[in-house]
Length: 305
Image (cartoon, rainbow, N blue to C red; front, side):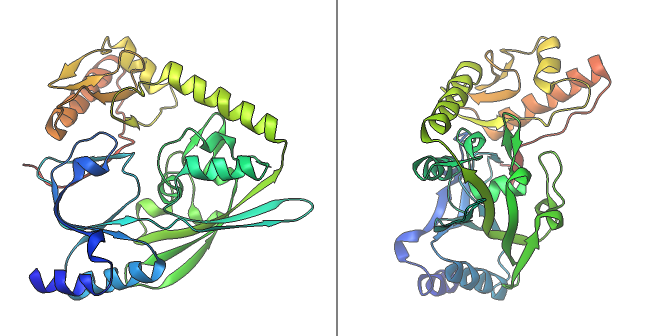
């Protein structure tokens, strides 16, 4: 691995390479063991070179954005974690619509603020969703009646052998909180979306309304990974968990939020083991009461301790 690290330093800035890096520093749940290697890439070229190096050395790699939908197990991650810090964008305005091309490492909040500044409407629903563009495309993120699929035109992605390919809207195979990227071995590098000319005051008011709603209904004061489970066709999953009497139920410092039963929060010192035990308990109770299997919305990576 020493040779691998040496070669890595020839590709990216030494300050962007970390050994035995705690993944708790890179997930919104503030949970996770150490990654063998952690590297921040700042360009598409760096990404390609790091992937080529990993493949050459048979080192498994994992891609993350802001870690807002992620649980890393307590044993950490063997191999290399690549954090995408690609944040360039360009805006093309015409009479009928506005086209924005944005790299996958930009946060949704930053994109929404750019849209506000440029008076671009249609992206307001992104403002309160944690995470990055890349993660949002992977899971077709959405809120307040809007989803990524509603504004997307096309995406470019890098295959695991370093080739760059393009997907049009239909190629993404968007579903509820899912896309082709859950199975496709590819890394979103940028996407092109559409907006419309809007009124700055109206855009700002809508974003403010969404922000206030989130503060009121979601446990933002505690580390969390957003909605823990996908919704079902029967009723909101949080409602089922609530009807099972599980609000406030905890395993260690992992707790079902008393504010919103769809969220598992870290009260301070929760481990991934605590969270997964709590997840399994919730699944069992929902199955018992509603005869329904609920699915995780958060991604789980890494090894047991």
